Length: 237
Image (tube, rainbow, N blue to C red; front, side, top):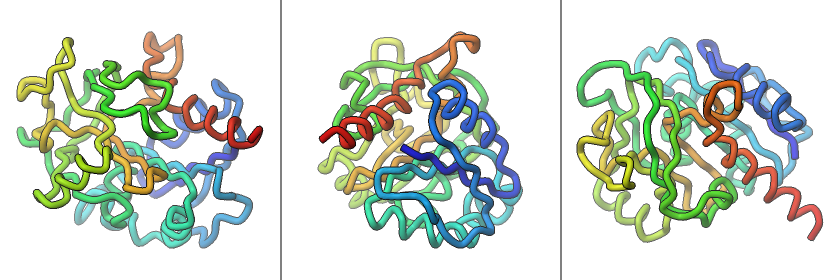
């Protein structure tokens, strides 16, 4: 499996992502500059990652300018043909701006930047990104955002629920979805979703910051291992 990590002006988690994928997990990783116009060398079973950061300084609206970077036309085409695409934090915002994922990320309800560890409930194991996690299990993953309040209209929310597209929700230590456990005011505590076709994934928390023992937290490692394991199984089939 090959990973491509897109770098926008203002990306600041691209090297973190490359480190985990390449040095910790031993994968083939290539950085992709935002002015590129193609994804030559990447196939359907590969994965393009949009990392966290502040693309274009978060001017206008988080992810709104990055969505029009030349590389994104190729990313959209790649996703529409079934390739895997993962957006973390700012990358999630970009995916929503492209409409590869429904909804939008708004300013946190308390109007403050939040950076801390947070508990997430895994709602589904029925994706290549979450199949190594038990449904309803709880993981501890850091967040770092000012515009992380996920919102969509009632019709979109209904479809997310019907199609089992809500991957993660902010929760308490017992897995309860409560107002107190919601750090940013996201609708129904949503922290991550996928598309209906289950090949595009977005989440505000940073699993790459919780994927190495030296950091004291490896809860995020299973998500990347899920993608890799899926590819390995497909290759043997």
